Length: 223
Ligand SMILES: [Zn+2]
Ligand SMILES: [Zn+2]
Image 1 (cartoon, helix red, strand yellow):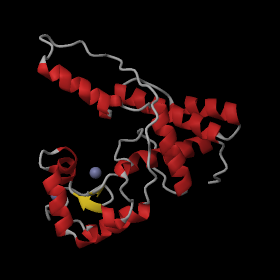
Image 2 (image 1 turned 90 degrees about the vertical axis):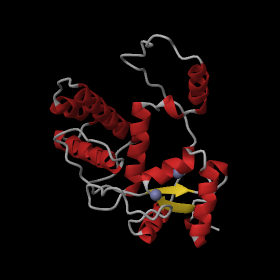
Image 3 (image 1 turned 135 degrees about the vertical axis):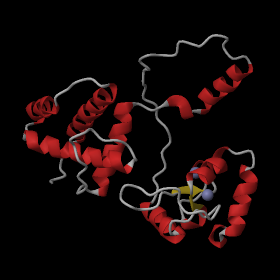
């Protein structure tokens, strides 16, 4: 498929996809073809070409381990540069979840000391907002190398990956021992393949420093 789609056109396609995805997960009815026809009217390609583009977006969802819009089987023949653009547009269209921000965490900590006595109402329709987060460009080659080196075994606890992905590969996550945000390098000397438990513990556990030190001793390339 030709890749000379304008950012505007990709953005409109991603918006349509995100909206369909949202409707489907909320159980609301929609007709995919209506979306393609709208896009065709706006940008002048065939309905079929938008359907195909949607399948590329499904592919990005599948890479992120997410459920794609049913009927839009992931189509993977899309360039790495387009994947990157689609990822950015997806998070732009969905807004960023604020739950991870440190400000949010500080508020939760404060509330935990005097929790509400009755269940708070929360929000039936949580709003999303665009935030800009510092994103570091990670080298996929580093990830691929580290995963190959680990060969399906967590480099921290030495247990096999807890499950396999749909494509049959073992599920391990690549972690930067010194965070990129703290000046860590995106190199194999600063990256380890971990099972989700060890990964979470290295980020959030009370013993995370000891565990990181243990990891460095265990894997010569890290020190
Ligand atoms: Zn582990
Ligand atoms: Zn990590």
